[in-house]
Amino acid sequence: MSKPKLTPEQQAVVDAPMQPLCVIACAGSGKTKTAVHRLVQMRRNMGASRGRLALLSFSNVAVDTFRKGYETLAVDLPAGVGRDRVEIATLDSFITTNVLRSHGHRTMKSKHAAFVVTGNEAFLDGFTFNPGTFPMSVTKLKVGLVGGVEHFFYTQNDTAVVVPTHVGHALAKRLGQTGAYTHELGRYWAYRTLKERPDLLKVIARRYPHLLIDEAQDIGSVHQAIVELLIGAGSSVTLIGDPNQGIYGFAGADGGFLRAYFKRPGVQPHELKKNFRSVPKIVKLANGLCGRDDETDRTALDRPHGAFFTGYKRSEASQLLTAFQSAMVVSGSLVKQSAVLCRGRGLATEVRGDDMPAGQGAVKTLAAAAVSRDRKKDFQEAFQRVAVAVVALLDKPPHGLVSYVTQVGPAPAAFPRARELRRVIWSFTRDASAGLPSASLPADTQWHSTMVSRTKALLVRLQTDFGLKTVDKVGLKLKKTGLPATPLMSAADLADEAARIRVDTVHKAKGESLDAVLYMTLKDHAGELLAGVGTEVGRIGYVAATRARDLLWVAVPKTALKELRPLLQAKGFEEVGVVQCSTSNALATLLAKA
Ligand SMILES: Nc1ncnc2c1ncn2[C@@H]1O[C@H](COP(=O)(O)OP(=O)(O)OP(=O)(O)O)[C@@H](O)[C@H]1O
Image (cartoon, rainbow, N blue to C red):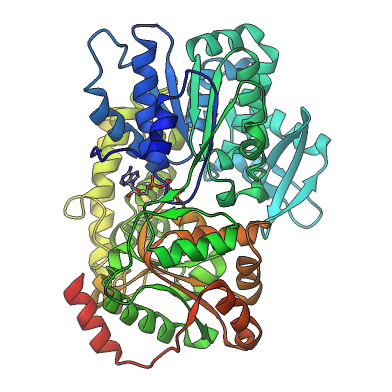
Protein backbone atom coordinates (compact mmCIF):
# COMPACT_ATOMS: atom_id res chain seq x y z
CA MET A 1 0.00 0.00 0.00
CA SER A 2 1.41 3.43 -0.96
CA LYS A 3 1.77 5.98 1.76
CA PRO A 4 -0.01 9.23 0.84
CA LYS A 5 -0.51 11.47 3.80
CA LEU A 6 -3.56 10.68 5.87
CA THR A 7 -6.09 13.47 6.26
CA PRO A 8 -6.52 14.93 9.77
CA GLU A 9 -9.79 13.01 10.22
CA GLN A 10 -8.14 9.72 9.15
CA GLN A 11 -5.13 10.47 11.38
CA ALA A 12 -7.45 11.12 14.33
CA VAL A 13 -8.84 7.59 13.97
CA VAL A 14 -5.34 6.12 13.75
CA ASP A 15 -4.08 8.01 16.80
CA ALA A 16 -7.18 7.56 18.96
CA PRO A 17 -6.70 5.98 22.39
CA MET A 18 -6.96 2.19 22.68
CA GLN A 19 -10.70 2.23 23.23
CA PRO A 20 -13.72 1.27 21.12
CA LEU A 21 -14.37 3.64 18.23
CA CYS A 22 -17.39 4.16 16.02
CA VAL A 23 -16.16 5.44 12.65
CA ILE A 24 -18.94 6.57 10.32
CA ALA A 25 -17.37 7.10 6.92
CA CYS A 26 -18.76 8.31 3.61
CA ALA A 27 -18.32 6.48 0.30
CA GLY A 28 -14.79 6.64 -1.09
CA SER A 29 -13.37 8.07 2.13
CA GLY A 30 -10.48 5.64 2.43
CA LYS A 31 -11.83 3.29 5.08
CA THR A 32 -9.39 0.65 3.91
CA LYS A 33 -6.34 2.84 4.33
CA THR A 34 -7.56 4.20 7.65
CA ALA A 35 -8.32 0.76 9.06
CA VAL A 36 -4.92 -0.66 8.09
CA HIS A 37 -3.06 2.34 9.55
CA ARG A 38 -5.12 2.05 12.72
CA LEU A 39 -4.32 -1.66 12.92
CA VAL A 40 -0.58 -1.00 12.64
CA GLN A 41 -0.77 1.78 15.22
CA MET A 42 -2.72 -0.43 17.62
CA ARG A 43 -0.15 -3.19 17.23
CA ARG A 44 2.57 -0.63 17.92
CA ASN A 45 0.71 0.46 21.06
CA MET A 46 0.31 -3.14 22.19
CA GLY A 47 4.06 -3.71 21.89
CA ALA A 48 5.11 -7.20 22.86
CA SER A 49 1.81 -7.97 24.59
CA ARG A 50 0.60 -11.51 23.88
CA GLY A 51 -2.93 -10.38 23.06
CA ARG A 52 -3.90 -10.61 19.40
CA LEU A 53 -5.54 -7.99 17.22
CA ALA A 54 -8.14 -8.84 14.63
CA LEU A 55 -9.26 -6.81 11.62
CA LEU A 56 -12.42 -8.39 10.25
CA SER A 57 -14.44 -7.68 7.13
CA PHE A 58 -17.02 -9.37 4.94
CA SER A 59 -15.39 -10.30 1.66
CA ASN A 60 -12.26 -12.16 0.67
CA VAL A 61 -11.34 -9.28 -1.63
CA ALA A 62 -11.36 -6.84 1.29
CA VAL A 63 -9.36 -9.28 3.42
CA ASP A 64 -6.73 -9.64 0.68
CA THR A 65 -6.39 -5.87 0.38
CA PHE A 66 -6.04 -5.50 4.15
CA ARG A 67 -3.43 -8.24 4.32
CA LYS A 68 -1.32 -6.65 1.59
CA GLY A 69 -1.67 -3.25 3.24
CA TYR A 70 -0.63 -4.60 6.62
CA GLU A 71 2.36 -6.46 5.17
CA THR A 72 3.60 -3.22 3.63
CA LEU A 73 3.07 -0.99 6.63
CA ALA A 74 4.07 -3.43 9.37
CA VAL A 75 7.70 -3.44 8.21
CA ASP A 76 8.02 -0.10 9.99
CA LEU A 77 7.05 -1.60 13.34
CA PRO A 78 9.99 -1.68 15.74
CA ALA A 79 11.55 -5.01 16.69
CA GLY A 80 9.91 -6.52 19.72
CA VAL A 81 6.39 -5.57 18.64
CA GLY A 82 4.29 -8.69 18.11
CA ARG A 83 3.84 -7.99 14.40
CA ASP A 84 2.48 -11.48 13.69
CA ARG A 85 -0.10 -11.37 16.43
CA VAL A 86 -2.58 -9.85 14.01
CA GLU A 87 -5.45 -11.70 12.37
CA ILE A 88 -7.03 -10.38 9.19
CA ALA A 89 -10.04 -12.43 8.12
CA THR A 90 -13.71 -12.34 7.29
CA LEU A 91 -15.95 -12.23 10.32
CA ASP A 92 -17.30 -15.66 9.36
CA SER A 93 -13.89 -17.22 9.04
CA PHE A 94 -12.86 -15.69 12.39
CA ILE A 95 -15.90 -17.33 13.96
CA THR A 96 -15.22 -20.63 12.20
CA THR A 97 -11.57 -20.76 13.22
CA ASN A 98 -12.01 -19.67 16.80
CA VAL A 99 -15.31 -21.24 17.71
CA LEU A 100 -16.84 -23.69 15.27
CA ARG A 101 -13.97 -25.77 14.01
CA SER A 102 -12.68 -26.89 17.37
CA HIS A 103 -15.67 -26.46 19.65
CA GLY A 104 -18.88 -26.32 17.58
CA HIS A 105 -19.47 -30.08 17.32
CA ARG A 106 -20.15 -30.38 21.05
CA THR A 107 -23.02 -27.89 20.88
CA MET A 108 -24.18 -29.40 17.59
CA LYS A 109 -24.10 -32.85 19.24
CA SER A 110 -22.04 -34.26 16.42
CA LYS A 111 -19.36 -36.93 16.60
CA HIS A 112 -17.51 -35.26 13.71
CA ALA A 113 -15.73 -31.93 13.67
CA ALA A 114 -18.00 -29.27 12.19
CA PHE A 115 -17.77 -28.70 8.42
CA VAL A 116 -19.48 -26.29 6.10
CA VAL A 117 -21.78 -27.35 3.26
CA THR A 118 -22.46 -25.18 0.23
CA GLY A 119 -25.55 -26.83 -1.21
CA ASN A 120 -24.11 -29.16 -3.83
CA GLU A 121 -23.55 -32.11 -1.49
CA ALA A 122 -25.75 -35.08 -2.38
CA PHE A 123 -26.57 -35.93 1.25
CA LEU A 124 -28.31 -32.57 1.64
CA ASP A 125 -31.24 -33.92 -0.39
CA GLY A 126 -32.57 -35.30 2.89
CA PHE A 127 -32.42 -31.91 4.64
CA THR A 128 -35.33 -29.79 3.52
CA PHE A 129 -38.20 -27.79 4.99
CA ASN A 130 -41.56 -27.31 3.37
CA PRO A 131 -43.08 -23.84 3.54
CA GLY A 132 -46.31 -25.19 2.03
CA THR A 133 -45.41 -25.00 -1.64
CA PHE A 134 -42.48 -27.31 -2.33
CA PRO A 135 -39.59 -28.58 -0.21
CA MET A 136 -36.72 -26.13 0.13
CA SER A 137 -33.12 -27.00 0.84
CA VAL A 138 -31.69 -26.32 4.28
CA THR A 139 -29.25 -23.99 2.49
CA LYS A 140 -32.16 -21.54 2.09
CA LEU A 141 -32.87 -21.53 5.82
CA LYS A 142 -31.80 -18.30 7.49
CA VAL A 143 -31.75 -17.40 11.12
CA GLY A 144 -31.94 -14.16 13.03
CA LEU A 145 -31.80 -13.24 16.69
CA VAL A 146 -34.06 -10.66 18.26
CA GLY A 147 -33.38 -10.02 21.93
CA GLY A 148 -31.60 -13.36 22.12
CA VAL A 149 -34.57 -15.22 20.67
CA GLU A 150 -33.92 -17.11 17.46
CA HIS A 151 -36.26 -16.88 14.52
CA PHE A 152 -36.00 -18.74 11.23
CA PHE A 153 -36.92 -17.50 7.78
CA TYR A 154 -36.08 -17.73 4.11
CA THR A 155 -35.99 -14.93 1.59
CA GLN A 156 -38.12 -14.63 -1.49
CA ASN A 157 -37.52 -11.65 -3.78
CA ASP A 158 -35.49 -10.12 -0.97
CA THR A 159 -38.38 -10.38 1.48
CA ALA A 160 -38.16 -12.48 4.62
CA VAL A 161 -40.74 -15.26 4.94
CA VAL A 162 -41.11 -16.76 8.41
CA VAL A 163 -40.38 -20.44 9.01
CA PRO A 164 -41.97 -21.73 12.23
CA THR A 165 -39.33 -21.85 14.94
CA HIS A 166 -39.88 -25.52 15.75
CA VAL A 167 -39.40 -26.42 12.05
CA GLY A 168 -36.23 -24.35 11.58
CA HIS A 169 -34.83 -25.46 14.88
CA ALA A 170 -35.43 -29.16 14.22
CA LEU A 171 -33.83 -28.95 10.78
CA ALA A 172 -30.77 -27.03 12.01
CA LYS A 173 -30.40 -29.55 14.81
CA ARG A 174 -30.73 -32.59 12.55
CA LEU A 175 -28.15 -31.21 10.13
CA GLY A 176 -25.94 -30.18 13.03
CA GLN A 177 -25.86 -33.74 14.32
CA THR A 178 -24.07 -34.79 11.12
CA GLY A 179 -21.42 -32.12 11.81
CA ALA A 180 -22.61 -30.04 8.84
CA TYR A 181 -23.58 -26.40 8.86
CA THR A 182 -24.47 -23.90 6.15
CA HIS A 183 -22.86 -20.44 6.26
CA GLU A 184 -26.03 -19.11 7.87
CA LEU A 185 -26.31 -21.86 10.44
CA GLY A 186 -22.60 -21.66 11.23
CA ARG A 187 -23.13 -18.28 12.88
CA TYR A 188 -26.07 -19.64 14.81
CA TRP A 189 -24.04 -22.57 16.11
CA ALA A 190 -21.14 -20.30 16.97
CA TYR A 191 -23.46 -18.06 18.95
CA ARG A 192 -24.95 -21.02 20.78
CA THR A 193 -21.51 -22.46 21.49
CA LEU A 194 -20.32 -19.19 23.01
CA LYS A 195 -23.52 -18.84 25.02
CA GLU A 196 -23.14 -22.34 26.41
CA ARG A 197 -19.42 -22.04 27.06
CA PRO A 198 -18.55 -18.89 29.08
CA ASP A 199 -15.10 -20.40 29.67
CA LEU A 200 -14.45 -20.48 25.91
CA LEU A 201 -15.87 -16.99 25.45
CA LYS A 202 -13.50 -15.68 28.10
CA VAL A 203 -10.51 -17.36 26.45
CA ILE A 204 -11.35 -15.83 23.06
CA ALA A 205 -11.91 -12.35 24.51
CA ARG A 206 -8.57 -12.62 26.32
CA ARG A 207 -6.87 -13.81 23.13
CA TYR A 208 -8.39 -10.87 21.19
CA PRO A 209 -8.50 -7.82 23.46
CA HIS A 210 -9.12 -5.62 20.39
CA LEU A 211 -11.27 -6.23 17.32
CA LEU A 212 -11.76 -3.88 14.36
CA ILE A 213 -14.73 -4.57 12.12
CA ASP A 214 -14.80 -2.99 8.67
CA GLU A 215 -18.03 -2.66 6.59
CA ALA A 216 -19.79 -2.75 9.94
CA GLN A 217 -23.12 -1.81 8.33
CA ASP A 218 -23.22 -5.44 7.14
CA ILE A 219 -23.28 -6.90 10.65
CA GLY A 220 -26.43 -9.00 10.87
CA SER A 221 -28.33 -9.91 14.01
CA VAL A 222 -26.48 -13.16 14.71
CA HIS A 223 -23.10 -11.58 14.00
CA GLN A 224 -24.11 -8.76 16.30
CA ALA A 225 -25.09 -11.18 19.05
CA ILE A 226 -21.67 -12.84 18.79
CA VAL A 227 -19.89 -9.47 18.86
CA GLU A 228 -21.99 -8.42 21.86
CA LEU A 229 -20.92 -11.57 23.70
CA LEU A 230 -17.27 -10.74 23.00
CA ILE A 231 -17.78 -7.15 24.15
CA GLY A 232 -19.43 -8.45 27.31
CA ALA A 233 -16.45 -10.73 27.91
CA GLY A 234 -14.00 -7.83 27.63
CA SER A 235 -13.01 -7.37 23.95
CA SER A 236 -12.78 -3.77 22.84
CA VAL A 237 -14.57 -3.48 19.48
CA THR A 238 -14.16 -0.73 16.90
CA LEU A 239 -16.73 -0.46 14.10
CA ILE A 240 -15.96 1.24 10.76
CA GLY A 241 -18.53 1.59 8.01
CA ASP A 242 -21.15 3.59 6.17
CA PRO A 243 -24.75 3.03 7.29
CA ASN A 244 -25.93 4.48 3.97
CA GLN A 245 -24.41 1.47 2.26
CA GLY A 246 -26.30 -1.09 4.35
CA ILE A 247 -27.75 -3.25 1.58
CA TYR A 248 -28.20 -6.58 3.32
CA GLY A 249 -31.31 -5.64 5.30
CA PHE A 250 -33.20 -8.58 3.81
CA ALA A 251 -30.59 -10.81 5.46
CA GLY A 252 -30.88 -9.07 8.82
CA ALA A 253 -28.17 -6.40 8.43
CA ASP A 254 -29.58 -2.89 8.25
CA GLY A 255 -26.70 -0.83 9.63
CA GLY A 256 -28.54 -0.21 12.90
CA PHE A 257 -25.75 -1.60 15.10
CA LEU A 258 -23.19 0.73 13.50
CA ARG A 259 -25.50 3.74 13.45
CA ALA A 260 -26.19 3.59 17.19
CA TYR A 261 -22.83 2.30 18.38
CA PHE A 262 -21.37 5.74 19.22
CA LYS A 263 -24.05 6.19 21.89
CA ARG A 264 -22.59 3.47 24.09
CA PRO A 265 -20.54 4.54 27.06
CA GLY A 266 -16.83 4.47 26.33
CA VAL A 267 -17.21 4.49 22.53
CA GLN A 268 -15.47 7.39 20.81
CA PRO A 269 -17.25 8.73 17.69
CA HIS A 270 -15.37 9.62 14.49
CA GLU A 271 -16.37 10.67 10.98
CA LEU A 272 -14.60 10.44 7.64
CA LYS A 273 -16.10 13.02 5.31
CA LYS A 274 -13.66 13.41 2.45
CA ASN A 275 -14.46 11.46 -0.70
CA PHE A 276 -11.33 10.57 -2.69
CA ARG A 277 -13.13 8.61 -5.37
CA SER A 278 -15.60 10.71 -7.27
CA VAL A 279 -15.52 13.97 -9.19
CA PRO A 280 -17.21 16.92 -7.44
CA LYS A 281 -20.42 16.65 -9.49
CA ILE A 282 -20.96 13.04 -8.36
CA VAL A 283 -20.11 13.81 -4.72
CA LYS A 284 -22.60 16.69 -4.79
CA LEU A 285 -25.23 14.40 -6.19
CA ALA A 286 -24.46 11.70 -3.61
CA ASN A 287 -24.78 14.31 -0.85
CA GLY A 288 -28.19 15.21 -2.24
CA LEU A 289 -29.23 11.57 -2.11
CA CYS A 290 -28.08 10.81 1.43
CA GLY A 291 -28.41 14.19 3.09
CA ARG A 292 -24.74 14.46 4.06
CA ASP A 293 -22.31 17.26 3.29
CA ASP A 294 -19.22 15.27 2.38
CA GLU A 295 -16.32 17.00 0.72
CA THR A 296 -14.55 16.01 -2.43
CA ASP A 297 -10.82 15.61 -2.82
CA ARG A 298 -10.95 15.60 -6.63
CA THR A 299 -11.27 18.47 -9.05
CA ALA A 300 -13.45 18.74 -12.16
CA LEU A 301 -12.12 17.09 -15.33
CA ASP A 302 -11.44 18.89 -18.59
CA ARG A 303 -13.52 16.28 -20.48
CA PRO A 304 -17.22 15.41 -20.17
CA HIS A 305 -18.00 13.82 -16.82
CA GLY A 306 -20.60 13.84 -14.05
CA ALA A 307 -24.09 12.45 -13.47
CA PHE A 308 -26.62 11.91 -16.27
CA PHE A 309 -29.92 10.17 -16.87
CA THR A 310 -31.64 8.75 -19.89
CA GLY A 311 -34.72 6.73 -20.79
CA TYR A 312 -34.55 3.23 -22.22
CA LYS A 313 -36.82 0.53 -23.57
CA ARG A 314 -36.24 -3.00 -22.29
CA SER A 315 -36.12 -4.23 -25.89
CA GLU A 316 -33.41 -1.72 -26.75
CA ALA A 317 -30.99 -2.38 -23.92
CA SER A 318 -28.14 -3.08 -26.32
CA GLN A 319 -28.49 0.40 -27.87
CA LEU A 320 -28.34 1.90 -24.42
CA LEU A 321 -25.16 -0.02 -23.66
CA THR A 322 -23.59 1.12 -26.90
CA ALA A 323 -24.50 4.73 -26.23
CA PHE A 324 -23.11 4.49 -22.71
CA GLN A 325 -19.88 2.95 -23.97
CA SER A 326 -19.55 5.78 -26.48
CA ALA A 327 -19.94 8.29 -23.65
CA MET A 328 -17.29 6.38 -21.74
CA VAL A 329 -14.83 6.83 -24.58
CA VAL A 330 -15.38 10.58 -24.45
CA SER A 331 -14.97 10.70 -20.69
CA GLY A 332 -11.82 8.55 -20.84
CA SER A 333 -13.33 5.67 -18.85
CA LEU A 334 -11.88 2.22 -19.43
CA VAL A 335 -14.20 -0.70 -20.21
CA LYS A 336 -12.35 -2.97 -17.81
CA GLN A 337 -12.83 -0.51 -14.97
CA SER A 338 -16.49 0.26 -15.57
CA ALA A 339 -19.77 -1.58 -15.20
CA VAL A 340 -23.46 -1.69 -15.82
CA LEU A 341 -25.11 -2.28 -12.46
CA CYS A 342 -28.60 -3.55 -11.75
CA ARG A 343 -30.50 -3.83 -8.52
CA GLY A 344 -31.42 -7.49 -9.07
CA ARG A 345 -29.93 -10.57 -10.63
CA GLY A 346 -32.88 -10.99 -13.00
CA LEU A 347 -32.34 -7.70 -14.78
CA ALA A 348 -28.56 -8.18 -14.85
CA THR A 349 -29.00 -11.60 -16.44
CA GLU A 350 -31.43 -10.19 -18.99
CA VAL A 351 -29.10 -7.34 -19.94
CA ARG A 352 -26.07 -9.61 -20.05
CA GLY A 353 -27.94 -12.15 -22.16
CA ASP A 354 -26.67 -15.11 -20.12
CA ASP A 355 -27.55 -18.54 -21.39
CA MET A 356 -28.01 -21.60 -19.28
CA PRO A 357 -24.73 -23.49 -19.10
CA ALA A 358 -24.64 -26.21 -21.73
CA GLY A 359 -24.35 -29.96 -21.10
CA GLN A 360 -25.65 -31.97 -18.18
CA GLY A 361 -24.50 -33.18 -14.75
CA ALA A 362 -20.76 -32.91 -14.09
CA VAL A 363 -20.19 -31.90 -17.72
CA LYS A 364 -22.60 -29.00 -17.30
CA THR A 365 -20.73 -27.90 -14.18
CA LEU A 366 -17.36 -28.13 -15.95
CA ALA A 367 -18.77 -26.23 -18.93
CA ALA A 368 -20.03 -23.52 -16.60
CA ALA A 369 -16.58 -23.47 -14.93
CA ALA A 370 -14.87 -22.91 -18.29
CA VAL A 371 -17.26 -20.02 -19.01
CA SER A 372 -16.66 -18.54 -15.53
CA ARG A 373 -12.93 -18.64 -16.11
CA ASP A 374 -12.73 -17.60 -19.77
CA ARG A 375 -15.67 -15.28 -20.17
CA LYS A 376 -16.26 -13.84 -16.73
CA LYS A 377 -12.61 -14.09 -15.65
CA ASP A 378 -13.92 -15.32 -12.33
CA PHE A 379 -11.33 -17.89 -11.29
CA GLN A 380 -12.80 -18.40 -7.83
CA GLU A 381 -16.20 -19.32 -9.24
CA ALA A 382 -14.55 -21.57 -11.84
CA PHE A 383 -12.57 -23.31 -9.09
CA GLN A 384 -15.66 -23.89 -6.95
CA ARG A 385 -17.45 -25.40 -9.94
CA VAL A 386 -14.55 -27.67 -10.86
CA ALA A 387 -14.37 -28.86 -7.24
CA VAL A 388 -18.08 -29.68 -7.24
CA ALA A 389 -17.85 -31.52 -10.59
CA VAL A 390 -14.76 -33.52 -9.64
CA VAL A 391 -16.20 -34.59 -6.29
CA ALA A 392 -19.38 -35.68 -8.14
CA LEU A 393 -17.18 -38.07 -10.13
CA LEU A 394 -15.80 -39.77 -7.00
CA ASP A 395 -17.07 -42.93 -5.42
CA LYS A 396 -18.15 -42.25 -1.82
CA PRO A 397 -16.00 -39.15 -1.30
CA PRO A 398 -15.34 -38.12 2.31
CA HIS A 399 -18.25 -36.25 3.84
CA GLY A 400 -17.74 -32.49 3.28
CA LEU A 401 -14.94 -32.89 0.73
CA VAL A 402 -16.05 -29.95 -1.46
CA SER A 403 -15.92 -27.59 1.47
CA TYR A 404 -12.61 -28.96 2.72
CA VAL A 405 -11.13 -28.25 -0.68
CA THR A 406 -12.73 -24.89 -1.40
CA GLN A 407 -12.29 -23.33 2.02
CA VAL A 408 -9.07 -21.61 2.87
CA GLY A 409 -7.48 -22.36 6.23
CA PRO A 410 -5.92 -25.30 7.97
CA ALA A 411 -6.93 -28.77 6.76
CA PRO A 412 -9.50 -30.57 8.90
CA ALA A 413 -8.56 -33.79 10.72
CA ALA A 414 -11.08 -35.67 8.57
CA PHE A 415 -9.09 -34.89 5.44
CA PRO A 416 -5.57 -33.76 6.33
CA ARG A 417 -4.43 -33.45 2.70
CA ALA A 418 -7.16 -30.98 1.73
CA ARG A 419 -4.65 -28.25 0.90
CA GLU A 420 -2.66 -30.46 -1.48
CA LEU A 421 -5.87 -31.51 -3.19
CA ARG A 422 -6.89 -27.87 -3.36
CA ARG A 423 -3.66 -27.07 -5.21
CA VAL A 424 -4.21 -29.90 -7.70
CA ILE A 425 -7.75 -28.74 -8.45
CA TRP A 426 -6.65 -25.11 -8.68
CA SER A 427 -4.01 -25.91 -11.27
CA PHE A 428 -6.52 -28.01 -13.26
CA THR A 429 -8.92 -25.04 -13.15
CA ARG A 430 -6.36 -22.43 -14.08
CA ASP A 431 -4.48 -24.16 -16.85
CA ALA A 432 -6.44 -24.21 -20.12
CA SER A 433 -3.54 -25.92 -21.88
CA ALA A 434 -3.32 -28.97 -19.59
CA GLY A 435 -6.42 -28.78 -17.37
CA LEU A 436 -9.95 -27.56 -18.00
CA PRO A 437 -9.98 -26.82 -21.76
CA SER A 438 -10.66 -23.36 -23.12
CA ALA A 439 -14.28 -22.31 -23.56
CA SER A 440 -13.27 -21.04 -26.99
CA LEU A 441 -13.04 -24.61 -28.42
CA PRO A 442 -16.07 -26.08 -30.23
CA ALA A 443 -18.02 -27.55 -27.32
CA ASP A 444 -19.31 -30.92 -28.54
CA THR A 445 -16.09 -31.94 -30.30
CA GLN A 446 -12.72 -30.53 -29.27
CA TRP A 447 -13.72 -29.13 -25.89
CA HIS A 448 -15.57 -32.29 -24.90
CA SER A 449 -12.94 -34.83 -26.01
CA THR A 450 -10.11 -32.82 -24.44
CA MET A 451 -12.10 -32.32 -21.24
CA VAL A 452 -12.86 -36.08 -20.98
CA SER A 453 -9.26 -37.19 -21.41
CA ARG A 454 -7.87 -34.56 -19.00
CA THR A 455 -10.59 -35.13 -16.41
CA LYS A 456 -9.92 -38.87 -16.52
CA ALA A 457 -6.20 -38.22 -16.07
CA LEU A 458 -7.02 -35.99 -13.10
CA LEU A 459 -9.20 -38.72 -11.59
CA VAL A 460 -6.40 -41.27 -11.96
CA ARG A 461 -4.11 -38.87 -10.11
CA LEU A 462 -6.66 -38.39 -7.34
CA GLN A 463 -6.86 -42.15 -6.94
CA THR A 464 -3.09 -42.72 -6.95
CA ASP A 465 -2.05 -39.71 -4.89
CA PHE A 466 -5.03 -39.26 -2.58
CA GLY A 467 -6.74 -42.66 -2.53
CA LEU A 468 -9.96 -41.09 -3.90
CA LYS A 469 -11.74 -43.69 -6.03
CA THR A 470 -13.54 -42.75 -9.24
CA VAL A 471 -17.19 -43.76 -9.71
CA ASP A 472 -17.88 -46.82 -11.84
CA LYS A 473 -18.56 -46.12 -15.51
CA VAL A 474 -17.28 -42.55 -15.32
CA GLY A 475 -17.65 -42.28 -19.12
CA LEU A 476 -21.44 -42.25 -18.69
CA LYS A 477 -21.15 -39.22 -16.42
CA LEU A 478 -19.01 -37.42 -18.97
CA LYS A 479 -21.28 -37.73 -21.99
CA LYS A 480 -21.59 -34.79 -24.34
CA THR A 481 -25.41 -34.64 -24.21
CA GLY A 482 -26.57 -31.03 -24.41
CA LEU A 483 -23.29 -29.51 -25.54
CA PRO A 484 -23.60 -27.22 -28.57
CA ALA A 485 -21.45 -27.42 -31.70
CA THR A 486 -20.32 -23.83 -31.10
CA PRO A 487 -17.78 -22.82 -28.46
CA LEU A 488 -19.20 -22.51 -24.94
CA MET A 489 -18.18 -18.90 -25.14
CA SER A 490 -19.85 -18.10 -28.44
CA ALA A 491 -17.94 -16.80 -31.44
CA ALA A 492 -19.55 -13.38 -31.07
CA ASP A 493 -18.41 -13.23 -27.46
CA LEU A 494 -14.87 -13.99 -28.47
CA ALA A 495 -14.87 -11.26 -31.06
CA ASP A 496 -15.98 -8.50 -28.74
CA GLU A 497 -14.67 -9.83 -25.44
CA ALA A 498 -12.33 -6.86 -24.99
CA ALA A 499 -15.20 -4.44 -25.53
CA ARG A 500 -17.72 -6.34 -23.42
CA ILE A 501 -18.66 -4.26 -20.43
CA ARG A 502 -19.33 -6.04 -17.20
CA VAL A 503 -22.98 -6.27 -16.21
CA ASP A 504 -23.47 -7.07 -12.57
CA THR A 505 -25.62 -6.56 -9.52
CA VAL A 506 -24.93 -3.64 -7.21
CA HIS A 507 -24.25 -6.11 -4.41
CA LYS A 508 -21.38 -7.59 -6.41
CA ALA A 509 -19.80 -4.17 -6.99
CA LYS A 510 -19.91 -3.10 -3.35
CA GLY A 511 -16.59 -1.72 -2.14
CA GLU A 512 -15.31 -1.08 -5.68
CA SER A 513 -14.24 2.07 -7.49
CA LEU A 514 -15.31 2.15 -11.15
CA ASP A 515 -14.48 4.74 -13.83
CA ALA A 516 -18.01 4.75 -15.21
CA VAL A 517 -21.27 3.27 -13.92
CA LEU A 518 -24.54 2.80 -15.73
CA TYR A 519 -27.22 2.07 -13.13
CA MET A 520 -30.11 0.44 -14.97
CA THR A 521 -33.32 0.81 -13.05
CA LEU A 522 -36.94 -0.13 -13.10
CA LYS A 523 -39.27 2.70 -12.19
CA ASP A 524 -39.42 1.94 -8.48
CA HIS A 525 -35.63 1.53 -8.21
CA ALA A 526 -35.18 5.01 -9.65
CA GLY A 527 -37.93 6.40 -7.43
CA GLU A 528 -36.31 4.99 -4.30
CA LEU A 529 -32.85 6.18 -5.34
CA LEU A 530 -34.25 9.69 -5.56
CA ALA A 531 -36.12 9.37 -2.26
CA GLY A 532 -32.85 8.82 -0.38
CA VAL A 533 -31.22 6.22 1.79
CA GLY A 534 -34.17 5.48 4.07
CA THR A 535 -35.00 2.26 2.25
CA GLU A 536 -32.90 -0.70 1.21
CA VAL A 537 -33.54 -0.05 -2.51
CA GLY A 538 -32.60 3.61 -1.97
CA ARG A 539 -29.32 2.52 -0.38
CA ILE A 540 -28.69 0.09 -3.23
CA GLY A 541 -29.05 3.01 -5.65
CA TYR A 542 -26.73 5.07 -3.46
CA VAL A 543 -24.09 2.32 -3.52
CA ALA A 544 -24.38 2.10 -7.33
CA ALA A 545 -24.03 5.87 -7.74
CA THR A 546 -21.07 6.18 -5.39
CA ARG A 547 -19.02 3.49 -7.20
CA ALA A 548 -18.52 5.94 -10.09
CA ARG A 549 -15.31 7.91 -10.27
CA ASP A 550 -15.97 10.05 -13.37
CA LEU A 551 -19.19 9.12 -15.12
CA LEU A 552 -22.57 8.06 -13.79
CA TRP A 553 -25.58 7.28 -15.92
CA VAL A 554 -28.92 6.34 -14.46
CA ALA A 555 -31.20 4.70 -17.02
CA VAL A 556 -34.92 4.73 -16.27
CA PRO A 557 -37.73 3.12 -18.28
CA LYS A 558 -38.90 5.48 -21.05
CA THR A 559 -42.45 5.05 -19.80
CA ALA A 560 -41.49 6.61 -16.47
CA LEU A 561 -39.31 9.36 -17.90
CA LYS A 562 -41.93 12.08 -17.87
CA GLU A 563 -42.69 11.52 -14.21
CA LEU A 564 -39.09 11.06 -13.09
CA ARG A 565 -37.44 13.76 -15.22
CA PRO A 566 -38.11 16.72 -12.87
CA LEU A 567 -37.06 14.69 -9.84
CA LEU A 568 -33.82 13.58 -11.51
CA GLN A 569 -33.07 17.12 -12.61
CA ALA A 570 -33.78 18.46 -9.16
CA LYS A 571 -31.12 16.11 -7.77
CA GLY A 572 -28.58 17.39 -10.29
CA PHE A 573 -28.67 14.76 -13.03
CA GLU A 574 -28.42 16.06 -16.60
CA GLU A 575 -30.45 14.39 -19.35
CA VAL A 576 -28.84 12.60 -22.28
CA GLY A 577 -30.68 11.05 -25.20
CA VAL A 578 -29.56 7.63 -26.38
CA VAL A 579 -27.88 8.77 -29.58
CA GLN A 580 -27.74 6.09 -32.24
CA CYS A 581 -24.18 5.40 -33.22
CA SER A 582 -22.48 2.83 -35.32
CA THR A 583 -21.81 -0.16 -33.08
CA SER A 584 -18.76 -1.25 -34.99
CA ASN A 585 -17.21 2.22 -34.78
CA ALA A 586 -17.88 2.50 -31.08
CA LEU A 587 -16.46 -0.96 -30.42
CA ALA A 588 -13.41 -0.33 -32.57
CA THR A 589 -12.65 2.80 -30.59
CA LEU A 590 -13.21 0.98 -27.32
CA LEU A 591 -11.03 -1.94 -28.38
CA ALA A 592 -8.27 0.47 -29.21
CA LYS A 593 -8.59 2.00 -25.75
CA ALA A 594 -8.95 -1.24 -23.76
N1 LIG B 1 -5.40 10.17 2.55
C1 LIG B 1 -5.59 9.81 1.30
N2 LIG B 1 -5.00 10.49 0.29
C2 LIG B 1 -5.22 10.15 -0.99
N3 LIG B 1 -6.01 9.13 -1.37
C3 LIG B 1 -6.63 8.41 -0.42
C4 LIG B 1 -6.45 8.71 0.96
N4 LIG B 1 -7.19 7.84 1.67
C5 LIG B 1 -7.80 7.03 0.78
N5 LIG B 1 -7.46 7.37 -0.47
C6 LIG B 1 -7.95 6.73 -1.72
O1 LIG B 1 -9.35 6.82 -1.73
C7 LIG B 1 -9.90 5.82 -2.57
C8 LIG B 1 -11.14 5.24 -1.93
O2 LIG B 1 -10.76 4.47 -0.82
P1 LIG B 1 -11.55 3.16 -0.36
O3 LIG B 1 -11.75 2.28 -1.53
O4 LIG B 1 -10.88 2.63 0.85
O5 LIG B 1 -12.92 3.81 0.01
P2 LIG B 1 -14.02 3.29 0.98
O6 LIG B 1 -14.05 4.23 2.11
O7 LIG B 1 -13.87 1.84 1.30
O8 LIG B 1 -15.28 3.50 0.04
P3 LIG B 1 -16.65 2.70 -0.14
O9 LIG B 1 -17.24 2.54 1.22
O10 LIG B 1 -17.44 3.61 -0.99
O11 LIG B 1 -16.33 1.40 -0.82
C9 LIG B 1 -8.79 4.81 -2.79
O12 LIG B 1 -8.30 4.94 -4.11
C10 LIG B 1 -7.72 5.23 -1.79
O13 LIG B 1 -6.43 4.95 -2.23
